Length: 123
Image (cartoon, rainbow, N blue to C red; front, top):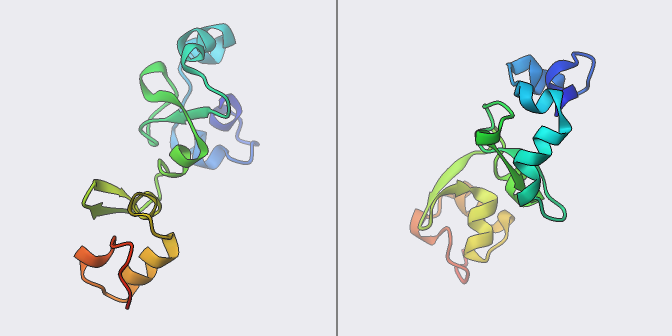
């Protein structure tokens, strides 16, 4: 988190510090302060995720997240309208009980929107 935001030599810097993403001074200067704010909600397998992926690392914009939550919170995700609200295609397919590939093909083949999420629909 600290290196990706402040070290121009770090591989991921372009997508973090290079875009103006920062770590709040409280966390940058003290792991104990970071852990005091974030530690109590930590769970096995969790990584730090910024709720607003264009926002900074600070207590009001960070949470512990699973890999799936992280993948669904990327700034380059395309969101679609579903019966369950706006979500990524991957999340929509998982919610509907179909594969991502099936949903992708249904969209590409111009199926009617109301059939995109039907787990038993066929061409």
